[in-house]
Length: 146
Image (cartoon, rainbow, N blue to C red; front, side, top):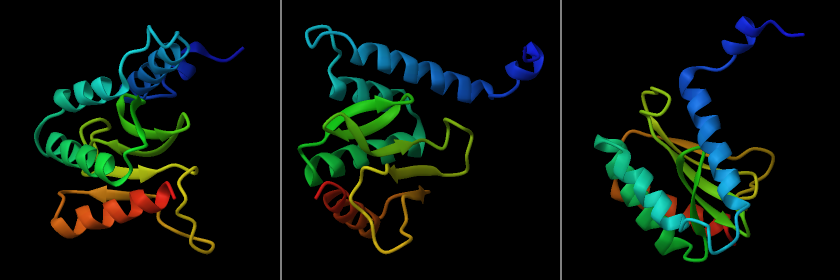
C-alpha cells in the first residue's frame, strides 16, 4: 500500500485544482444535453476570472479561434479555455497565473492537423500578442482543423 504522505505530495495544489476542474468537466459532459452548461459561457466565465495580460490574451485568442474555425466548440479543459472538434480538444490556452509560470501558453493537441515532417511545434509561449502573432495563430488554427 502506498505511503499516504508521499502520495499526497505527488501533485502541487495548483495541479490538484486543475485535476478537480477536469473531473467537474467530465461529469458535466456526461449529463444530458438539456443539463449541460453552455460551453462558450463556461469559457467566457473562466476568461472573466483571469487577470491582467492573461485575460487580455485569452479574450483575443477566443476571438481569433472563433473567427478562424467557427466550427470548433468552446469548452473548458482543466479549467482553461479550449476548443474542440467532434468532442476532442484541438487547441487550448493556459494562463501564466494558473501554474505560476513566467508565460502563458497556447497549444494544440494531437488531434490538430499540424503534422510537418517528424517534428513540429505543438505549443507556444506567450508574453503578449502582436498583430503578427495573431495572424500566425489564425493560420495555425485553420490548419489544425483542416
